[in-house]
Image (cartoon, rainbow, N blue to C red; front, side, top):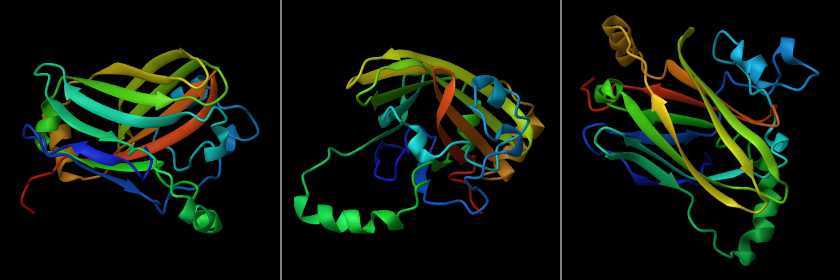
Length: 229
């Protein structure tokens, strides 16, 4: 999710969601993991990882299909309540500033927007099933077997792996789909530890086309929103 996203819905239904894109997290680099160097990274590779990655496993320019996420919404399936929604603003013609933006382009961190931070209340950990709707556009190439693998860790403990298929996308298309997240039942002591340890719950989101990694995004989570410090 890019830095230009606009928050549409949050702080609703007692879940108090705060969302922010982080330009750079100091301990994340672009250097590939040693065991994955000089090869195509596949779903099987990331499913073998035993902890959150310390690196981005591909460069931003690996997205040769120009896949661009434009809207993201999560809702509680039991109540139907929309918990969180962001979308990219409509692009306007700003010819007067185009040249200036091109001059400054080399100063922009290429990893901007690849790392997102969320803050929820403890109530969020009580949710059982959440629907995540994404809208995205595709460039001038067909996209075969578009797939996302998302792995959530608390520290070095794997909480859950989500594996979703987007399928085939035609060139220049705008696509919308909803994936269902079924959250595991966590021990009470682990839940309390996650609440007491903001942003130590993290996720890697890996996106593949034809079993080749083309995008890698990261997020971290806090569950102490609304609590007095």
